[in-house]
Figure (cartoon, helix red, strand yellow):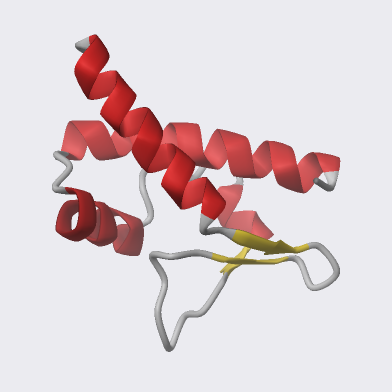
Length: 91
């Protein structure tokens, strides 16, 4: 992956993380890629077994950022790693 491409994808991750709100008390995560009727993710969807991108995430990344399937896999991994860390460390 080229530096320019990686920089863009890292910015996408940064935007996604910034626009994600974690409710530690209710164990819910509000994301920019979920809309009604699904307003939030449960913590369990960030389990290591969910290594494949969540379908609404894939659609959002294609429609908003124009990402390819390969790029979406990279962004999903980076995004979930950051959010998991925030969930596990309560920050």
